[in-house]
Amino acid sequence: MYPEMTNQNPLEMELADDERQPCEVWTRVMGYHRPTSSFNIGKQSEHSERKCFVEAGKPDTGVSRPVH
Image (tube, rainbow, N blue to C red):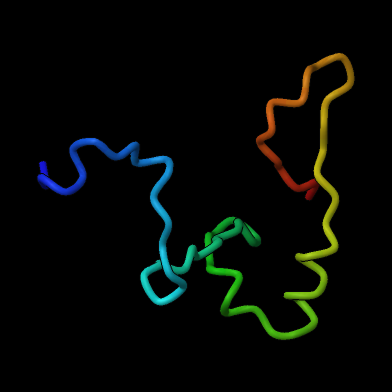
């Protein structure tokens, strides 16, 4: 453990934008997985407009799953 971090809660750390790692989002398309960053402009737009499905009678757990 780093001495300068022993008294610091990791949830309270602040990162500068240049220290952040981009999150790559993948989706299943026609039976295989591919990153959404490789989609063309039209497919990226369609992917961002997808609605999340929440089953009736079940509490929303905060995990979103797009309707396919």
